[in-house]
Length: 276
Ligand SMILES: [Fe+2]
Ligand SMILES: [Fe+2]
Figure 1: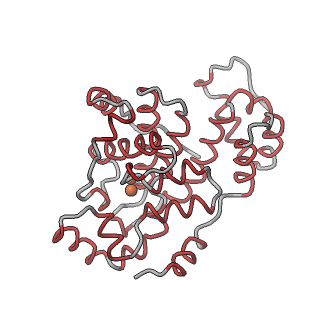
Figure 2: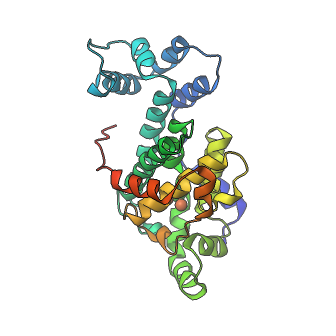
């Protein structure tokens, strides 16, 4: 079984978020800060600058003239979009690999994460959840613990799967039984280490058990439902999808109806280009 010490070591081996990203996220969280302060931090990193300008100049934002400075781009995109962009770029680097412990080929965890992020954002709009961008980010990082536990799950894969089959319990319960931890708990610890807001830490920790949410239970429920939709549609159907229980009681709580869920399933689009 994985001891807490081994786990901490494993979490420490995951690269931290780049310094510029961490500092920018702090500026964004601080309600007092200005666009000028954020632009100053972002401008220190060349690749972030390039990505920001590319986003700000994309047709999506409908700007008729060329945006050429980080300050302008910061104003056009806004704090929440920039936060999603920074985290998307960082998470992409981390999860766009083979996660063999969870039977996910290279790119599959990325695809699952970004699809879940988009579905969570869409559901958030449908049920008028006020922080749609927060739902996007929570969907994006909910399975980040798999990156940490990958090797441990891989080594005990047979045992975990036979526990699922024999005891008819979901993958993540078997994961906890055999390893002592599951990817939701471990992901939450990683998010804490990255200094992400507590609502996000909570959503990661309880994405498979939304009734256990201790902070923003609606955010957690949105991620839970978005995750289930992605698994039903076959996005990222690794071993995590085995006996995945959708907690239907949370639908009411978050204000989602079966019709809205069906709508969201139809609206799942093909993956956009994320060349970041
Ligand atoms: Fe998960
Ligand atoms: Fe997931």
